[in-house]
Image (cartoon, rainbow over all chains, first blue to last red):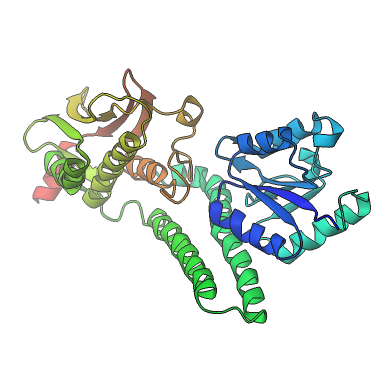
Length: 129
Length: 242
C-alpha cells in the first residue's frame, strides 16, 4: 500500500505543523513548505504530491499563482488535487483559483481530511490506497 | 476625523477576520490533535505541548484585540495642547535603552521653538513616535548583508506653520510592493508572530485624529517616515491658560 501524499504550504509554522500532524496520523505522507519557492523545488524534484494545499498569502508569493504554476507542470510532476486554505473573509470561491477544494480558516481538520480523501477517491488517484 | 476611521472600517473588518482566523485555525487543529492523543492514551509532555500552543494562540488573539480597542477611543476625548519637545523626549527616552543595548545610534535634532504645542492626546502621540522607533530598530535588526553602522535620525522642525517630524533609518528601506500598503491594517514586513501589523495603521489613525498625517518613503540608506501636524492655534493655548 502506498500512502497518499500532500504538500501543505503555509508560512504559519504552527498551523502547518498541526495540520501535518493530523493528516499524518490519518495515513497521509505530508511535506510542510513555508514558502512558494520550497513547494516548487519539491515538485520539480519529484515529490509525488497527490494533493497540494496552499495558503493564499505566503511570505514569498501568492498561493493562487502557485496553483497556476502547477497547472503548467508536466503530468507526472503535477499534483492530482489542488486546494486552497485561507483565513481571508473576502476571498472569492475556489473557482477563481482553479482549485479543486477551498477551506476557510478556522477549518475543522476532519473536514480537510474528509474532503481530500473524497477527492482522491473520485479521481482514482493511482497512488491512493 | 471619524470619517477617516469609517473609510477603513470595511478594510479593518476583513483584516481582523483574517488575523484572528489564523490563531483560531491553529487552536482548532491543536484541539483535534490533543483529542487524538488523549483517546490514544498519550498524555504528559505531548499533551502539555498542545495546551501550551493553544495558550500561546489565545495570547496572540488578545494582542490583536488589545490594539483594536484603541481604535474605539473617542477621537476628541483628550484633544488638548501639549508641548512637543517634552513629548518627543519622553518617547525617545522610552526606547533609548533598547537602542543602546542593540548598538544603534540615535541622532536627534529638535529645532523647535520653546513651548511649541500641538493638540491631541499626548500619550497617543508618544505611542506613534515609540512605534516608529521600534520599527526602525526591528528593521535594522533584520537588515541583510553588510550594513553601515546602524543609526536612526529623529528630526523635528516647524515648516509653514506645520510641525514636521521625521524618523529615518539606514536599514536598507522598505520593499517597494509594501510601501503603498504600509498603513493598511495587518500589513507588516516583520516575521510571523513578531508584529501585529497594526502599529502604523493605528499611528495614522492617531495622527489623523490630530488633523495631521504620516507618509513613508525610501531614501538613500533606508526608510524615512514623515509626520505633519498643525501647531496649536493661539485660541487653544488661550483656552488652556484660562
